[in-house]
Length: 325
Image 1 (cartoon, helix red, strand yellow):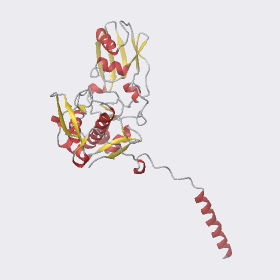
Image 2: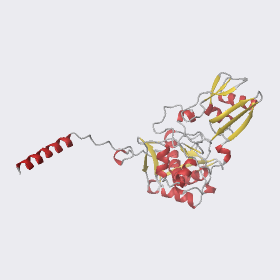
Image 3: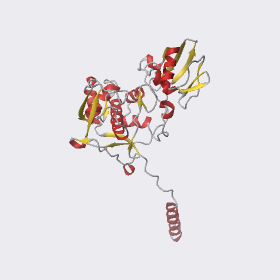
Image 4: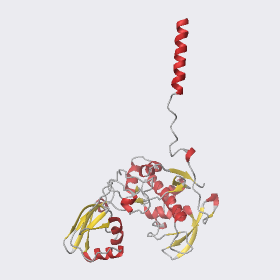
């Protein structure tokens, strides 16, 4: 009996020592409620029912400023940026990003249209097409009402694009982003759907030499003539960061905007060739490549992913929080 008691006491002592030496518990992940810091809604925005922000929006299509609830504006942007018959979880992911985008815009920027918080001018903000709002769009916006993506208590730059061609880009790589790389942006694999149009999966466009020179002039690049064009530096995703005109490097994302982003659809370039008169560019994908790929979101939703899963795949260490009911 004494032997058994001695063994038991030794076992008990061992357990106490083991417990005291155990590794400390892990810190809560960035997505746990304990660490979430809610962003403030910009004070210049008035508030409506259930604290929903009310926006003053310059309607580019009419040239007038209208006042509308933020959720109504978001419906129009989701309808303008993504197809209304897509899987509901892809639409919901787009709605969360659209809502985050407008609040970040109002918080950090000023519309070029006087007295407006934001506009429907897609060159300034997001595309907007209320004519495409249907029951799917309404459901996606209503079911994500008030939800925004934040990092460290601030609205994120909620970037998205059409088709990543297999991998997303860092902000500096895809957008020539001037500030430090956002901590929530990373280059990730993107399983972009094969249902995407063939002309964005692979594309070719030929520009005249004069069109190229006009684009360079628009950028403020001091090139009056060139005889060769080659792909220069590439980024982590495989996108071209610089095109070399003779030996002069020109930022590829900026060149894409200057020459026409609907023509040079991305900087995921496979080949460039210049014959002395025309520059032919072959590439894959559509858009700057940063953040969420819409055709990737489409495929993830078809495979059963939820809106939060989609956003967390394309961004890292975010919180998705509810700001109004």
